[in-house]
Image (cartoon, rainbow, N blue to C red; front, side, top):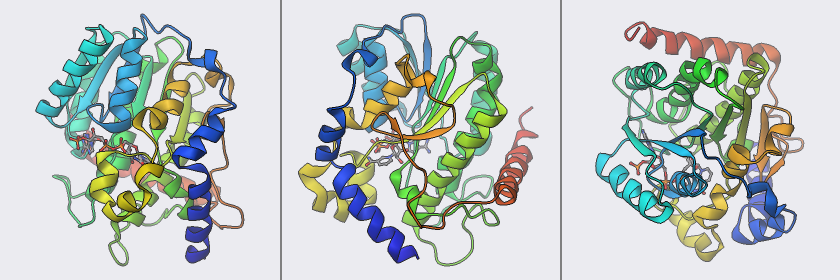
Amino acid sequence: MSLYRNVIWFLKGIHEYTRTGYEEASKHFVAKDLDVSVVGRTFMVTGANSGIGKATAMAIAKKGGMVHMVCRNKDKAEDARTEIVRESGNTEVYIHIVDMSETQKVWEFAEAFKKQHPSLNVLINNAGCMVHKREVNAEGLEKNFATNTMGVYILTQSLIPLLQNSRDPRVIAVSSGGMLVQKLRDGDVQSKKGYFDGTMIYAQNKRQQVVLTEQWAKANPLIHFSVMHPGWVNTPAVSTSLPQFHQMMGERLRTVEQGADTVLWLAMSRVAVRTPSGQFFQDREPVPAHLPLAWTHSSTEEIQNFMTKLETLAKATQCLVV
Ligand SMILES: NC(=O)c1ccc[n+]([C@@H]2O[C@H](COP(=O)([O-])OP(=O)(O)OC[C@H]3O[C@@H](n4cnc5c(N)ncnc54)[C@H](OP(=O)(O)O)[C@@H]3O)[C@@H](O)[C@H]2O)c1
């Protein structure tokens, strides 16, 4: 089954996730969807110093929005902010240094942000990693899981009250089409069992983001939640974590602006919020979160089991903060 999923997924990727896939899909885009001003609206973008996150922060700043860049590296964050302010002419761009893999630090940041800021209209969970060696954070959580799932869970969960009190609130997760090859492992949320395969753990974390988004949408009707795949994009994450794939794909990889397009459409356009909350998007369209005949659907009980495990792990570290 996993070989079937991987083959189908790769063929789909060659057709849809590449630069030509984007060019084909973009023929159906409505240009005026992104012809909006977001002056007076506040956005938080994690991993905003590089790749898709930086392209997203840049485009929002150009449209007049206030941007909170959440980055782990101060020098890289400051370089990116300087470039964004220079190119956009918008000085309302702020840096927060947070390592999204450090669970307790994420709680501390989110709780402090909530107290210090009157509103947050859009949260973009973009920061992500694919670590190929098993490493754990200060709380003993595996690094891919801590960054891609627990960091996203805590930041979002903690900021929901602030988002709910803001106008037209939205939460977007930058997932990956790679999640299509994974069924949710509800009993083993940190993928502890079996051989350590960073690529598959990353894909499992991205599946977890899709499930989280569906569950948040059900529980929080005042907020518009979405999760998306940016396509295969030429970024440092791909060149360092998947060097052979990066080399093989070369010019076929999308630009960062192409990768950021659907994030921006979900974050800024008026039409995006007319779609039902909780869906998985690719190139400005809701698309199935499962491959045909791939047996990746989970039962209500499996999803509930996953949510309970995540909540328990998160609460264990929250007690240390509040
Ligand atoms: N590129 C693709 O083809 C592709 C495909 C599917 C999904 N995605 C997703 O797109 C998102 C953006 O990735 P990208 O491709 O644009 O790669 P990128 O240019 O390397 O950007 C990743 C960003 O995440 C940050 N980050 C990673 N771990 C972090 C942590 N622990 N705390 C805070 N920030 C952290 C990085 O910071 P540093 O600069 O300090 O490392 C960087 O700013 C990721 O979620 C990725 O999984 C990408």
